[in-house]
Image 1 (cartoon, one colour):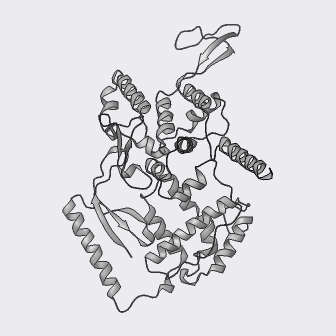
Image 2 (image 1 turned 180 degrees about the vertical axis):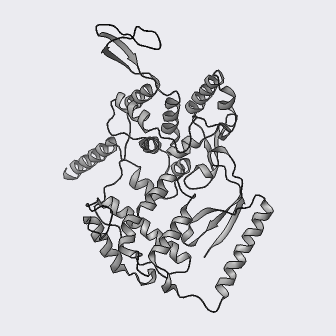
Length: 406
């Protein structure tokens, strides 16, 4: 069943769309934004009413085309079309990549005739890299296989919403055991300090090479090699970006999408619109004093630059980046200089959650600050029991056992 909700213009990357979008709620509690193609609110309301009337007429029709005529390849194409523009470019590319494995196996089959046994057989072949006609034929990890199953279930759910099948053949299939759990990471205070210093200080290395003596345009160099110090440029936004990630716990996309108008300096609060948040809900929470002070100082430095007007306007990006920008190279360089091994940018979010736990913050409050909806996700992928707590628990058992023996 499809239900329509809020109608408004979205503001991706800080710029409002030219047409109005409507929030669409499908079966299973899933919601998404759908473009009406209308440039006025009144026209968008009329478009929604037409869609509701059309769906009501379809449900009341006595005769209906047989669902057996819908093939898997057709459903896959329509499913991809529904995702176009509603998910990130990277996510859409991952979904489109499923074509290399799904279509060779399910493509010519009628979707209503696909059974759970067919899906299980596909997973067995996919795991060992033996899907007939697939683009690649190498074994895959269980974690990748479970991701494939999740996307396959999403496609069958889409087919149910559209009325092409009555029940998902993958509904009763559980994820394969043995999947590698996501890393749960914490940082000691000394490690955090090293990381923030590496994000701010320009690294200097000693280089032995011939020096240029021909002016700025070059052309001549010294006869012998000389040793000299050479500094690498560090992006000025990197320190403030990592600091905000460590003390506010935002996801990368949300961080890169933040605008100066999302900070209420007077009330000391974040007011982030839902289109910048993964859960598509507006986010509002207090800002830590350290982050507020550092971002205020950062804005003052931007006001002294050449492009101060463009960088400091309310709808300008705080860090001067796009939501799709890559910060991996600069961040990993800082991680190496800090001597941290295997630390990713998303680990900053895990550090934030574990810091809340160490300071006695309740689970409900922590989820409100991070924007999580599922407590299972927090417990499985983010929360880590400190070593000190484990040692304390063992000491208590040892003490209790000694008292019992006496």
